[in-house]
View 1 (tube, rainbow, N blue to C red):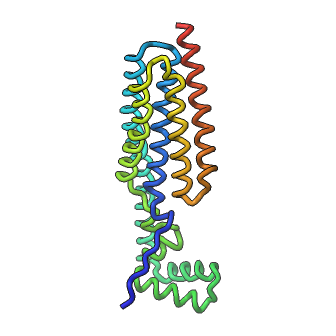
View 2: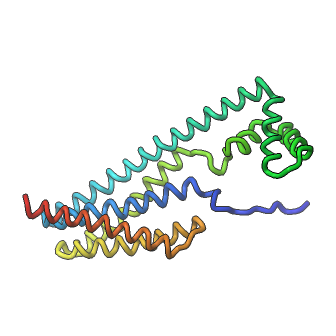
View 3: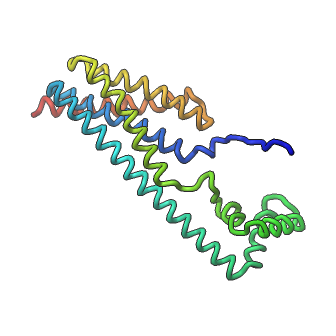
Length: 231
C-alpha cells in the first residue's frame, strides 16, 4: 500500500491566518497609536500606561467579539445554503444531477465524461459535490467563529503587548519616538511574515504595513499634541 501523499496549501490556513494577521497588526498599531497620541499631550507616565492597558484589553475583547459576530454570520449563510441545497437534491435529484454535469462540462469535460463524473460523485456524496463545485464551499474555507475570535483576540494582545513593554522600559520623555520605532519594526516583520505565509512578496507586505502604520501614528500624534496644548 502506497503511503498517502499529503500536501499543504495556503488556503488550508486562510481562516486563522487572516484573523491572526489582522489581530496582531491591529494590536501593534492601535495600542501604539493611542500611546503616542496620549504621550504627545504630556500627561505623565502613569496616564500613558493606563491608556495603553485600557487600549490593550478593550481592543482584544473588541477583536474577539467582532470576529465572532462576523464569522458567525458567514457560518449562518453557509448553513442556510447547505440546507437549501439538501432540499433541492431531495426534491429534484435529476435536475440537480444535470446541473452538476453542466458545471463539469463548462469546465472542459466532454458531455459524456461530465455526465459520468457527476453520476459517480453523486453516488459518493451528492451534497458535498454540489456545495463544493456549485457554491464553492468546502472544509478548507469553512467559517469557524470560535477559532477566528480566539485568533484575533490572542494576536491583538500579543501585538499590543510589544509597545506596552516599550512604555515600561523607555522614559516618558522618549515614548513619542521609542514606541513608534518599536511598532514600525514589528509591523514590518509581521507584514513580511504574513505576506510570505500568504504566498505574496515579503518586501511589499512589509512596506505596505509600515507605510500605513507610520501614517496612523503621525495623525494620532498630531491630534494628541493639538489637544494637549489646547486643554
